Length: 284
Image: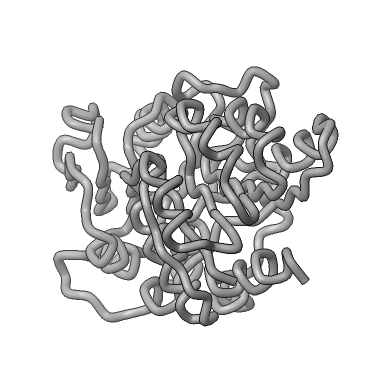
């Protein structure tokens, strides 16, 4: 199934996920090419794909609806930011027969609201076992407690509330927005992003990875239906694949469903597995 991956833009976590999806498409022997949304009409005409995957779309997609409507072949919207940006996903219902969303509550709401014959799936985040895997790391990657991610209101409150508890622990915080964090002046606070290779090393070097999920009121959102987030983020699967303990915060309703560390199978929750289970079955 010739596939054209279409990006509105690539930054942050989406850059890594895009690479893993591309690798997984190659693994399952799907012929694929990629382009930015500005070039989709020409790229589609030249490549003649059976499926266009619009990956991790943002508001730029509204400017290209006319071109999207005229594309030949099938069209799939794959949203990684629901429910926080779910207004966009709902707006795309008339234009995309196939929709993947990483959030189950959003998938349910889409199915209830659509007036079209869309095929809508909840496709969870995933890991890449070739990248996210156990390894021995040098001392500089070691910590008692690790968090990787930018500062949101709920995360800053978490660290403030636990400063006393963590004062005798070796804490590493990596991300933008934590400079001058009260109570952590003597901890390792890295005001930066790190490469995925470095990120995996820090995971493998910690005793406990904090997984502080984004909350609905952390940032301005396009979630007018006020859908409550239910998805486990990509970090959950990546940490599990490294066989490291993690503390999941902000997904209380999911805690009873979390797999045990010893029973987690990275190959079952890999991007390749997601493509086989969901994507390759679409046109059967």
